[in-house]
Length: 633
Image (cartoon, rainbow, N blue to C red; front, side, top):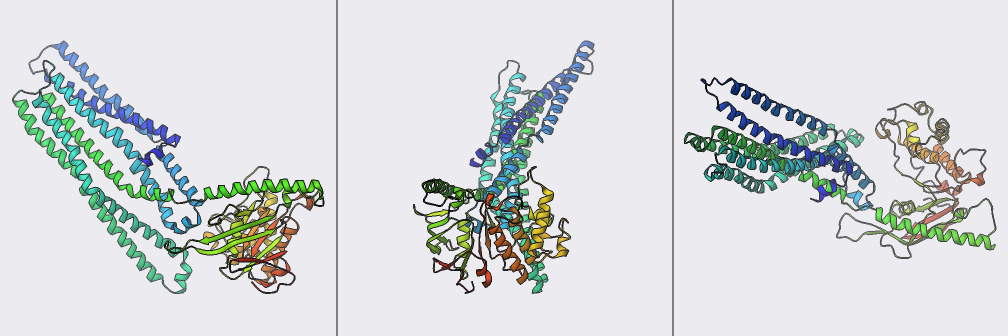
């Protein structure tokens, strides 16, 4: 029910759903109309005998037959048009779009713990399979069931009573002619409900088993493709194929089991309907022979039985489809309800903005009071420091019974904007965690009132990950370079392309790669057709091209050769000193915002370029003198 309520929050889905409900009522009205058309048509024909010579009566009857034909044909034409129009009401498409976008938004906003629990293949299947099942097999089918089949069954029972009334001479209803067929029809839902109650749990388990087998199949394909080099290095091609064949066999076995269950379940209602019609053939036929009911009533009742049986069968199959969608709804619901970091992000964002306002006011007051030397090239916001106060952070372990692993404890840090800052420390000591905290990628755990992670709110911050991320196979090198830049008519894209080329060349990108700068498909899937070092150069160049106020780099030179590493460090230094890379020379440096760059590295010579160096050890942070420090990271 909660799922159905959520579906109605989408305006286009709500509007289309109302149209579908009205269309179902029209369908039901057409079905009842056809019953009465058949009844009156049989009555009209049964009034004639071979020796009836009344010409006027015959002509009137022929005109009535034409009217009956039109009453049969015209509503059907409108019914066809409504069903055709249903394709454009955007109920299924609108709801699928809403759920798929919502799932992607949720995934992009999961907190660190949620993201670590989610398997890629399961998220993919939730978006492309489970959402489709939830929409087509649950929501739309629920409308068909309630406003189609159930309403039609009520109308069929009502029409049976009306037929019995108009077929009698005095308009009365003979209980012996009505009670048996109506009782038989009303018994059908009781049998169906009991059958569903018994079979529902088994159907859910079989469907879930089929989904698990399909997920395992997709998971193996994804892992085999991603780990191809490992498979090739250890000559495990045959092993992986045989393992994949085992997953296929398991999926086929699960699919056969569910298909067999579904076929047997589908035949339950047809058997009940067949027995019901056969019983009425004997009972109703005897009543016609005894003169208790008219032939037209008998035939119309058989039609009602067939329609009712058909609707019960349809409603039963709709319920089976809804039951089969429970597993999909469970998957979608699970991913829609995993914890996200948006509330935490909002709390820290509000605290940062409030602290930023306070710091700006204090800075302006200091400038006005002469406590600081007045520099017209500096704005108050450029004097705001980057700082951390009383920050602790722990990673949650996979075992929920164990305490979280502490990485940072009561950490404090402060440095001004416009600096090139290095973080040093042993592997796993917390260097990357500090950078992630400053980039708002993670947040302090158990924050106290005085806990603060402050980067001035006006700063745009870009992270450059240790593992280079390159888009492919369709994207070009140019598209990778400009990925972070929003489309705008004010941007000179020709100049931007030239600037991106120069940045890559200055980072040491090879000429043969630069020749394919705008060639689609050159990079391959996620850049597999170029080396990791080349992917890292694109990764670095993308950040420098975007020119944010703050860049955070995780081991930027780890994958580069000595020459490329020196070029990278030189560009990092230029980014800070010139407040950007390859900026317009006509624009004075003092008119640009300060640029700040934080990084970790494995290269000892970095002490020559860093303005400030911080060392992390035993959950503590200490500042080193870059002029005296010579120890490698």
